[in-house]
Length: 159
Image (cartoon, rainbow, N blue to C red; front, side):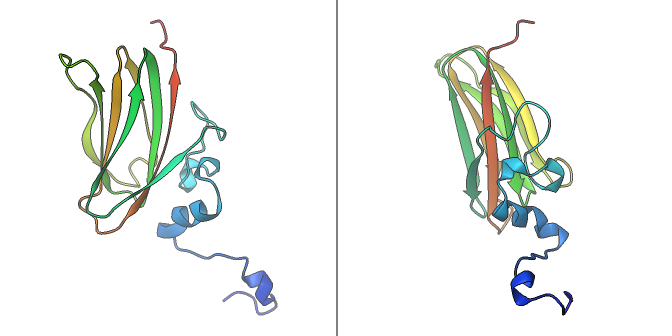
């Protein structure tokens, strides 16, 4: 398939994969924050840049995984989430530290397909101490998935 004129050393430098595995393969060789969104990464113009750290977590098959962002002061919390191999459930809520406060649903749990929304971007203005909890539900799948996320806190805008 590859030209017979290429040496074995040159051929070993090529990686050929189908469209369904391209994002996972790129992530193996290039940092996810450097790969453009359309190719399965998190790089795009906007709130985050390549210098913003990305955290990687493996979501086990048939399991739910929660990610908690504790917040101690008033701020605007912004985050991006990408799951390699999508088709998972995603939800977000704010849980205040005060016992007499109510949990605020930021994003009602919903199923997200890879073709529908490659990167989930969201933000929430926080007015009291608490934590933002993201839930990734992989309970309907028999395959593990890689979860990439990053977050940033900014002072709240005065609108």
